[in-house]
Amino acid sequence: MAETRIFTGRGGAPGRARGAAFTYRAGAEVDGVTLEALFTAAAARLDAMLAEADDTLAPLLEAQRLMLDDPELRDGAAAGVADGLSPTAAARAAAEALAAVLDAAEHPYFRERAIDVRALGGLLAEAARPLPPAGAVVLAEELSPLDTAELAKAGVCALVTRRGGPTCHAAIIARAWGIPAVVGAPVEALEIPDGAPVLVDGDAGHVTLHPGAEEASVAATAPHLTRRVPVYANIGDVAEVARALRDGAEGIGLLRTEFLFQNRATAPTEDEQAAVYTEIVRAMDGRPVTVRTLDIGADKPVPFLPLEAEANPQLGLRGIRLCLQREELFRTQLRALVRAGVRVMLPMVTTPAEVITARVLLTEEAAALGLPAPPLGVMIEVPMAALAAPELAAVSDFFSLGTNDLLQFLLAADRQHAGVGYLYDDDPPAIWRLLAFVIDTAHAAGLPVGVCGEWGADPAKLPRLLALGLDTLSVAAGAVQRVRGWFGEMT
Ligand code: PEP
Ligand code: MG
Image (cartoon, rainbow, N blue to C red):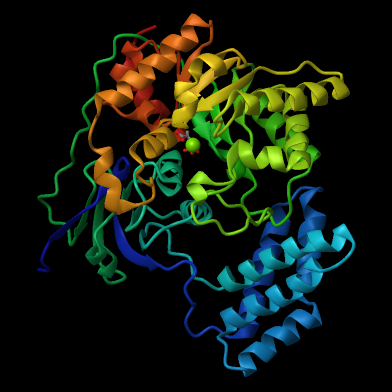
């Protein structure tokens, strides 16, 4: 019988699952694919997306579909192959060459189309990548949020990545889908041959090759909670609403809007956004819905807004910083949020000035629509924001602790970087002192404080957050049932 081997990484998403290994290499060349096969696969992808698209999205996809038959694109790619490029590289290069021409166009309409062409290049390069069969255990160097969502939809049973920490977005999406994941796995785990039987334990952070019968299940221990607070769900997909409701979510505490539109080549319009937000509000049937404005940048890129490469994207132009520089994009979203009547929350806030500016825009857009301006809250996820809690409380309606980013910046340890993941194991009193300061300050100013970072569903952290006076809790949709279970019959 084959030898059992255990590789230890870090728990990324709880639960245990067993399946056949499947190595997934996003961004790598797809072996043995022809240029024709790439175009055919991309056309099939677009057709599938078109079949599900609504009236607003359909024309945009149709435009991409037409672009796919553009002789310049096809001839450019064929010339690249003739010059010795691989079909994938040639397709990307041909799209880039076309995009560069559009970039230089005088009319803004054509300049904006450059984004679509680049996105089409990306689609072409990835279209022929085979997806794993349902039930597979995916082994990957790293996974983008989009890859993770696609794999989850394909029905894989577990994820193992070498890069990434427990608060990286791949782990967050895996938790949302209820798929066990191990992150920061050693390189040997990625060498497991395709098809080999693997057991993934997302609680212990173990990946077991050839698991034996002795692999007994590990019972998760429930924490002792003393106070009941409402349990809301974090979502990034409309499909998660049904699951959240089924599991008893009492509201939506965080809608990650950048995930809603991450497979879009063009920015979502006001009507498209309003339709999605309204659908969620209707489904939640009077329960509170808090929507975070676009948190694009760093580990959350979106194809419809290509960003310049940055040396330190985590510290760069992202979240509210980016939105305030792209005012039309931001105003469009604010209008849609006002129309849907949701609570609005700003990501990556550093200074009160950002909140004041955002509130001016929100108030102006609400007034123009003749609708009331919704409550405006702030995520506390930048150390400066935590320290500036008194000043921020004076200009905000609520706080939500974004412990994922707050920890990464306090520890100066990239949440995606497995090598510094050990820094997250400690429980330094300094962090608790800071959280106590934020909660006390907010309460003194009459503001409620929630948590929407992953610490909310961490049995070791939740009792302490409640002891500090936390008012609400928002956890991954896939964790709602478990966390509600911890509260038992408490009312
Ligand atoms: C956080 O940083 O804690 C958070 C909830 O936001 P995200 O994980 O989307 O960065
Ligand atoms: Mg964050």
